[in-house]
Amino acid sequence: MAKIPSSIKLGGQGGIAGALRGVALGLVLLVAMLFVACTTVTRIDAAHVGIRVKLAGSNRGVSDIPVVTGWVFYNPLTEQIVQFPTSVQNVVWTASTHEGRTVDESITFSSSEGVNVGADIGMSFHIEPDKAPHLYLRFRENDLMRLADRYVRNAVREAFNSVASKMPVQEIYGSGKTRLIHDVQKELEQVLEKDGIRIDQLTINGALRLPENVAAAINQAMEATQKAIQAENRVRQVRAEADQAIATARGAAESARERARGEADALLIRARSEAKANTIIRLSTTPAVLQYRALERWNGRLPAMNQGPLPMLTFDTKSALDKDAEQKLAELLEETAPGGDAAAAPGSAPAGGAATGAGGDEADKGAKPAEKPAGQAPAGAP
Image 1 (cartoon, rainbow, N blue to C red):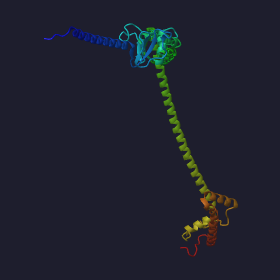
Image 2 (cartoon, rainbow, N blue to C red):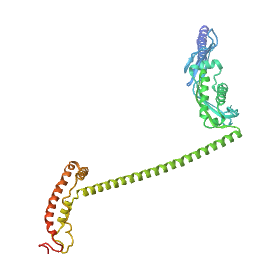
Image 3 (spheres, helix red, strand yellow):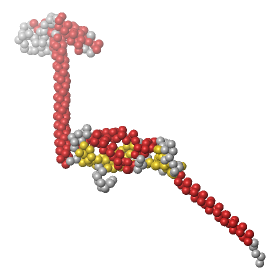
């Protein structure tokens, strides 16, 4: 069997070793690149903002420009990336051990009388992204809960003491609670917004805690106030009912008065009309008219026995209406005549009077036989 030369064997082994060394070097370079990539690239999560801090160089310090969400390249030897959450943070300072921490973290403040008031406070806030570098530069803290338990809590306590010291305890415990929260939030905004902390909501959780004697006195005062309000409401109700009864009676009296006035006016008008009619009848009833009426109703027979002058036929036909009576009669007829008939009415009376006058003359002619001696009947009498 032929043998392989030793030079050929050595050459083959050297090529394999070189290939292995190349592979190893490539792996080392790859691992180094991966290490560098992992240490020089970081990711800013959603609802967070990154702050670039330069650790070396002439511009070392916190950069004023925050880093937005996403992948960020930086030099780990000379730079540092700090993340700040920009989402809404909720914090509660309460005396209950079942919420928040196991210690009493409630806020205590004093009223204008110096009465200590305890309250459980809840607050929601967030960080403005463009103010995050300033906030980190001032406090060197990116844990917002730790920042809230220290700086923010102290600011809240100071604001409550500042506002409550101008209010009486009864107002704080009663209707002034809403105004207290509003004024405290307004004062906090002036203090915290300079550092980029925006308050979303501030609340007082539960009832305020007062000393027992103060709470009892306030409750008694509120109860007395409620009773006084109820009594005042009852007085107003009784007064309103009385006013309503008076108005009803006044309306009924006014209605009765108007009804009586209307009836009186109607009676007066009817009486005036009747009086005017009677006056017209009286003025228009002349002896000639009466003689004419008597002749209309006479059956042509004279009484069989008569000791005096003949009845109903001895009217004085020579007397007539004087001028004053005729003028008054004409005025009355004009007032009572409807429309254009008023002018014709006065003329009709004289015509009637003339007629009756004529009839009266006839009656005079027929009455002449009555001048015979009493007891003697006319020729045609039965």
